[in-house]
Image (cartoon, rainbow, N blue to C red):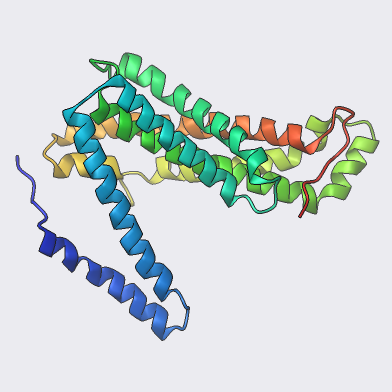
Length: 262
């Protein structure tokens, strides 16, 4: 089974879709024309660049290069997650914690799969390790950013309630329990919704890509099931670790609430 090649002229034709969005933005006076154009150019440039990087990596596969690329991806994910938080501590405080939460969540989801479900030979086989790890890093990044933003924002908006519970003898964990539960539910809900609607609303990206490239549908489905289960694990683990970090930043050793500066 072959796949349809996209030539450069045909690729440029797809810019017409961006032109539609720009025209609608201009007509509605949204002021997003520049952002849309810049996003389209930057996104394409980044994908082309990573395409060449992966081509070199596949042709000259070496564990050091694979680990280096994954490390760069982790650092970028951590920096992005920290940068998205508007109501929390400074970025330099959140950055190492974001990396730890994202990295731990990704490892929990990736190591068992590559050890038992999809064994790699060698272990650094880039065509599996890099794209699947990238999906896990991306999901963990979004979860960690959401957890940090929501829990710091809710602690600030409901500070009186939290302090009242502390005054009544509640521990920091107990005083923040309602906010933590709401935050984790919000962080996990998109992943759960994805599980419930997969195959009904849309075909997932990896499954679609494999089918288009000629992989038998039954194998593409099995890979996608594994990916979905990985995404659930990475969201749960990264979210819980991010909550633990946030709780430590919100309370002193004497169980006093400390809100980050505005």
